[in-house]
Length: 80
Image (cartoon, rainbow, N blue to C red; front, top):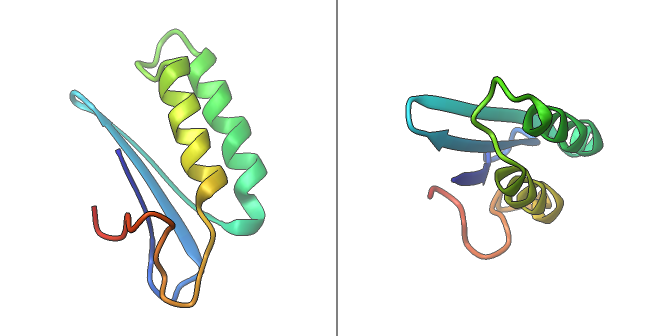
């Protein structure tokens, strides 16, 4: 799982790779609640491999991502 900020753009990037599937969210801080709702809807969809456990971890990442002047996330996750 990868959670980063794109430096200087004001966008947050959240990505999850599960086998051959890729889940990627690009959003601004003001769209954080919508991203959380969409992650929940995706976890509820039985046609996707995204689980409720994945959704919980992703939601924690979204809630913890705060844009700072250096474009990094708490915990030094930049570039992971």
